[in-house]
Length: 137
Image (tube, rainbow, N blue to C red; front, side, top):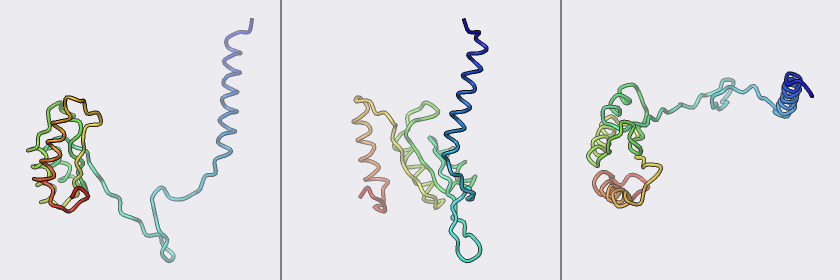
């Protein structure tokens, strides 16, 4: 019978050899971790954008005050309360006044008994909130 320590040592060596062989196939480049375009002798950095996912008006205000470039509102509620049409409208207005991008989110899973409520919400958003500036029109 082979001692367990020898079996473990053989497994460790096999995993190390496999890792070394897989890593040898990867060609690393020494590019900067940000996107850049080279214009002349110096790179020109592209601006990053910060989108913040929130589920309440207060969180949207805090994100905008902290410098978020955009808001992703809706979807799942992190505070376990229903997000109403009035919530969507209030955050839409806040984002419009602050001149930040806003995207609306839906729950990842929509149960059959919630489908009609989601359809009503989307219809109301299109008719009442959307100003015709995006792909929904």
